[in-house]
Length: 68
Image (cartoon, rainbow, N blue to C red; front, top):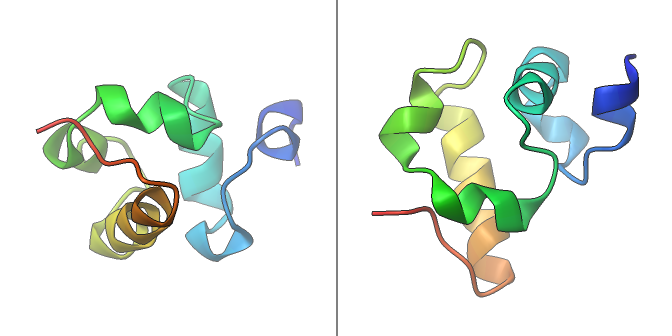
């Protein structure tokens, strides 16, 4: 794994590709996701509905959400 994915706080359930591609786009922490919408995330390679669902649930557990 690359250094980017090792530094990610996202769960392994996202998968390697999604985690790597999120890191390439400078998303490695939940608080960084509050500045992007779900539709913008879906445009990133490897990020699909399952990844969005997992991230939405993790954000909600932290009292955070995607940008509207």
